[in-house]
Structure formats: structure tokens, C-alpha cells
Amino acid sequence: MMPSRFPMRKFLMIPKSLIMLSSICAICSACQVQEFTTPTATAETKTAPTPARDGTITIAAVGDIMLGSTSINDSFLPPNDGRDILKDVTPILAAADITFGNLEGPLIDGGTTSKCPPPVKPVEPVDPKEPVKPIRCFAFRTPTRYGKYLKDAGFDVLSLANNHSLDFGDDGRVSTRKVLDNLGIAHAGSDRAKYAMTVVESKGIKIAFIGFAHNTVVPNVNDLTFSQQLVQQAKKKADIVVVSFHGGAEGEKAQNVPRVTELYVGEKRGNLPLFAKTVIDAGADLVLGHGPHVLRGMEVYKERLVLYSMGNFATYGMFNLKGSHGLTAIFEIKLGPGGRFRSGKIHAGKLLGRGIPALDRSGEAVRKLRSLSQADFAATAPNIAEDGTISIN
Image (cartoon, rainbow, N blue to C red):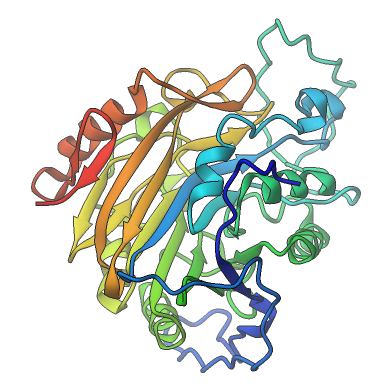
């Protein structure tokens, strides 16, 4: 259970199993999105919801989460079986009305993967004092018991739209949804039909989350027509629409945002400025990016905030965390009536050791985000103060 000193949020979740898209075309971008229906049943509330007096909702958002993996052996699990991995950041995550992150990989205890060939010889247990040798193929499998750590830290919504959600096939996706459902954590983007979006409610405000990535199983960032249709459908069911995307190239050289379709390992990973503006024009109120494993800049379009990459957040054991890869942040975003960006705060962080997130008083991530935002977006970049406060003129 979450320690009592952490505030309980007034939050009502409408299960994604009740928010369904019917008969969505699986391939053709020109097909029309069918209306999804919402049965009248609702989930049990954490506490009785209190309407927001000024119409403001606070969303805390973070990037990639992979708390540890057993896909090779248990040496890639964190100390104390992961119980403390989110300890330092929990007070901020738990304080928001809605807390969101990208779950990088499935929650499953067994199963098999066809993604990566088995190693030539068994991997020896890793000495924490020694650098981890790079692995050319990544297939993640996080124990199902680790789902509770996400719940206890305050996560309410997770995106399952990314290039690792299928690491253990359909079994991994089904297991992940079951674990999150049992914990009361909403999820979006597991596929482009039934689980493309979810709607949650807090303070009497309904917020839809849609998950996009760059494969054919989930809503695709390259398919702008379908993206518009999906946002328009979500807008009919919610007061605020949040779009999450997993896109862009990866690594130190991918910190800047180009205005063309990005290619990485032969995949089209989206023209992300065009995608962001397209979904905002269709009705989205906040765009949250992840995928490059480094922080990227921010801009404001039509009074809506776009985060092009929130970087790694809690990625244990298998990631390169050197330099910019080890910078992280919690983005606290306040949206006013109609979904307009009101204000925000960047809580700077770093990934310590093999991937444990910790708050960073030096504010290096804040300076990085300000520099990248000014370099890439200039006139449309938000104001980012030394203390991480985000504002617009």
C-alpha cells in the first residue's frame, strides 16, 4: 500500500473494456472510425470525486518505464526485487490528479519470445560495480508482481503503444492488460481497435488517453487520417483528450526534432511536428512523446503543449544510461477549462546506477529541455524558468 503521507487523489476510472471502438479498419487509413459505445456501469472510485472549482486538472507525465527484465536471467532485476525503485519519485507522482507513463515491455511471468535469438552461452550474474555489456537485441519481460509498484507509486494510466509491447507476443499483451486491469490502472494503445484508447475521470472531468506508436498493431503515427478520426471520436466522449506517441529516432544524436519523417533501423517513426499539429487540429489538448530514450524539446501550438520526448524514466538493467540517456524528468502539467495549457513544472531527475530514477537538485534536465526547445522551436517554445516552471506569454 502507498504510505499514508502521500495524498490520495480523487479519481474515477472508467475501464477501457467499457470504452470500445467497433469495426476499426486494420490496414486502410481511409476507412472511417466507427462510434464506440460506453455502457452505463462505472468502476468503484478511490474516493468520492470532487468537482474542480476552476476547471483545472493536473497531469503528471513521464517517459519510458521498464522496471527490470527476466528475459535473460534474474540479474537484470533491481535490488530488493524492485520494491524501492520508485521510492524517490513517488511523492510527486502521487500528488497529481492523473499520473501517466509509457510502459516499455510486457508484464508476464512466463511465455517465450521469438524476437531475440538465445545467447551463445549463459550470461553470468552482473556485478553491480562493473559496467553492463551492451546487448544487441532487446526483449523485455517484467514480472507481473512489479505491477503493484506502479500502482503504489501513483500511476493511473499507462501507454502500451511502443515497440516492446509485443516482445512476448500476444501472451505478453494479454497478461499486461490483465495485470493492469486487476490493479485498476487504465491503459491505452495495446492495439488499434478495442484497446486504442481509455477514458478516466477526475474532479468531474473526463480525460481520454490515446496511445500511438510506429507499428501496424497499434494506432500508427504515420497514419494521419486515422489519427484524426481517432481523436475526433475521443473528443465526443471526453472533456480533454491526451495523445501519447512512441516515435522518433533513438539515441544521443536524436535529441533534436526534425520536420521530416524520421527513420530508425529501417522503420518510419513519424513526422512528429506534423503529427502533433494534426491531432491538435482534430481536438487533442496535450501531446506526450516518448521513444528516443533522450529528452527532446517542447512547443506550444494553439495553446496546447507538446512534449516531443520525455526520455527514459525508470529503465533498469538493459539500457544505455550514459550522458543524455540518463537525464529524466517528471512533467507536471495543469490544464484549464477546454484543455488549454495553464502552467507546468519540470521536476528534474537522473537515472542512478543501472536505472533507478532520483530527483536532481542540480536541474540539469531543466537546462537541457530549455536549450533544446529554444533551438528547435524558437518562437513557439514555452518559457522554462530555472526552477523548471513552464509558462506561455
